[in-house]
Length: 504
Image (cartoon, rainbow, N blue to C red):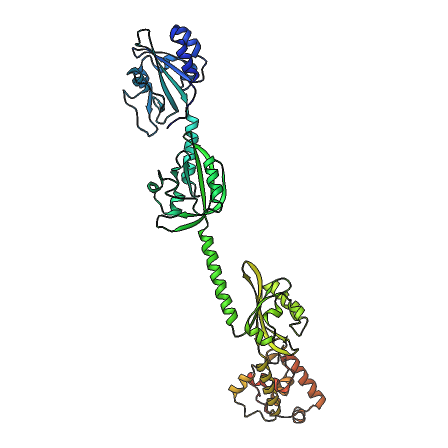
């Protein structure tokens, strides 16, 4: 680690000033210094240590450090930060005795009997010579930097395990000095491909939303606000991200911590949504049934297809921005409120009978389906309007024709009857009851109707008046949900009528 230029420490100044005074006076000067000071004689004896140095070794008096350098090595094992243990000759004591001057050595201090280091010392040397220029007093000056390195370790661990992609750029030369696994996973780079490379090699600010501001703040070492950018990938591709920069110090050097958020899944989702909407609109325009899109509130028309124009006579320009109620699109005023209530409760409905009013004032029988959809992030209603006017008209004509020949219905095959039984008038009543819920007399009347007898013949057969017969028939109609004789006969034949007559 390198350290920025600094003024001579107070211990240096005190010791240099004390070269001309005796050891006792020297002890008085350095006793109260915050930095630890250990005095070593040329004969490798430990002469004295101040209180700060004793605290940094967990000692109460200088003798606890050992009388000599050899004893110190027995009582304290030192190792570098890379876990390499120092051997004899590598200790700061040995190096200063050998005449080596050093400005900064960082070691971990392990007391005898311990397995793990208890302190981290940053040590520098000072050699005091006598009048002849020979080493007279050797001085080790130390600081306890345990807290600083613990904080750095915590930062290192947090940085490495943080799932958010991040890199650290040294501001002095714009080179990457740290990268975490999140960034490697995001980009596909390896650690060796990033560390030591420059910002110009891996441009994390490429196509940034506010590139000039980002560059200016990077030069000034200021916070870079969040902005979108395109990350360069090793395969030559790009990845959309949000990037932000925060100035920090690492090993006493000004750096910039860049963190990232991956926007690529969002961009892909937006592209898929856009393609999906494009496919939907293509199907919407080409659909053979009338379709319209309205707002969820107020049912204001936003778009219609060509089939809707053919069905209603209204063009897109004429209806755009107008509500269904304003156009009086539905013949029954209650239809739209009922449809809105169903949409609010169930988000959709299918096959609702309605009559649509055309531009020229005519009417078209329809089956209407509707559902809540999301289009361009807005909630809308998709209306599907199927023209069944011709089919409904044909059903009514068929039922009328059946009624004219009901005096003799025995020629109808069972297959034909079953098919005809599926035809119902628009807006039919609720589901009819089952056969067993009819009374005996009601079943008898219905069975005679299926045989083709008229009212007079049925009344005579049942032994009742024609008024009584009409009451029976009215109750049958009400129970099975029909209002015409032909419909009643179709319903009955579908269920096995006419019934066998009891033997009399």
